[in-house]
Length: 173
Image (tube, rainbow, N blue to C red; front, side):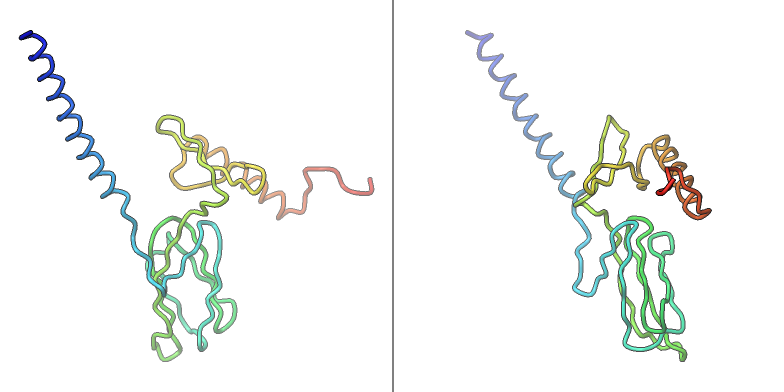
């Protein structure tokens, strides 16, 4: 009977310890998954996509807080094209000819969760754009070998497109 009581105490202590560890892990995971709150004025741009921003008057200069996250092109005097280059938060400041601030806006570059599928094997991730077929896509954080292969294939396709060459058959032949 003594061994039974001792075994029960050991099991109870183990369960209590497991619950404490699980609670600590849950707290850590909760802290790690807290996202940056968005504000009504934030411009949300999807990774590798663009958004148009119309300004109230002509812009003379555009300053980008972190050019590795977003890029801005002035299309006409009052129209900006903001392109998401990498995940993160930055800001854009548009100035007029007198260097007055026209607009100072936070930009959040996020993943397009609707069409993106990630394949995770252990610690390696591969990203695919599924719209509707799944094709590999270059995404920051993917496995390096996969990323290099997809990037090289994309560059080859881009070069073929720019040179006017066709990889397939031509209609009418």
